[in-house]
Image 1 (cartoon, rainbow, N blue to C red):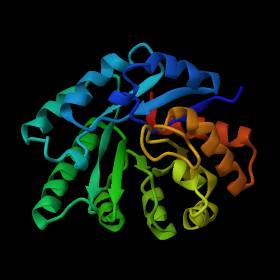
Image 2: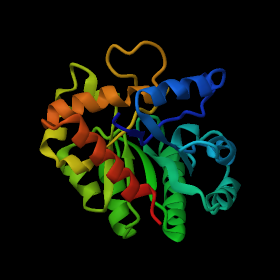
Image 3: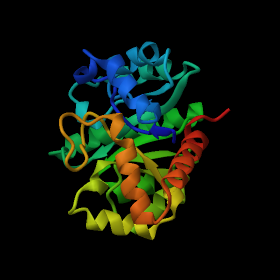
Length: 256
């Protein structure tokens, strides 16, 4: 059986609380063996180490822009303490979301959190997991300015080929999830076709961003379905996609 990694999912979210272990057993029957679970708040980042300890689930520490109303400036110092634990895999999920930033003050707050977490990743020599909407050019420019070289993942990438190449030039990869399965995703499919196969990492963003025709909350179990569409678009075998995905994930996040 092919083995799969979900490079970005929120398997810790409450929707999975009642049947998390049973749900994970189902994922494993489909070959999904590894997860990367990002942090979104300080409180949630703190509990991830215990949740992930007994599984092949890797965790990150981060302050997501969507939860800006929960973040306090003191959380940055406390987040650094969490991230210094030896099993912290990356800093994230953090970034810029200009869709929800409804004022210049909101953008300013997002930038402050972004710069602080990027600096933390550089200090700890950890990759990043980035959430970026309507701000790809600005984020890519800041990565260049800060000479960021630790790599990472741009979650749910939906920008242009040019924007993608700006990230790839800095050693980041692009998250590809359920969006590519939708019939109207022609622009995303063209972008996927235009870029090398090793530009993409498979992810679900479960329980959100469900694939086409998926019933109920999204799940890491959707990874093989997403992989089938990617294999069709790239004219590769599923075995090639699986091997490539595992190699990229290990290279980015499982550094010795």
